Length: 161
Image (cartoon, rainbow, N blue to C red; front, top):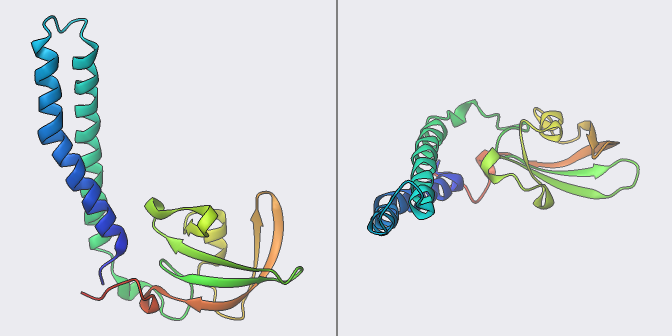
């Protein structure tokens, strides 16, 4: 299964490596050509960016590796887990809300994309259609019913390798 997050991380990794290997050496060359490095703000900024990129590249490589070794067979096919999309109905107001359980890099609460580690995500793990869910959002308690569950195994955006 090929996850969209891998494409995003690999592009960011490629762009960061290019900046580290092409842009930073150019910036350092320009800064050293200016003379005295002890009070050269451009040189200091380029060196700090270089250290940041080296650290970020290392983090991205580890994250890509961690994601690639995920065993998708361990993610349930019949209940909520990583990659699931749920449509919930507020039992008091009848309002419907959609949540997508995503990797931390993809979190966007305004789009309903939440992490498994978030309080809302934790309250949804293991739920099935028809289950009731109690959760607190922005300090308010809500009671929902799971109307529809689509697991990662049935998401159209996930490509099988």
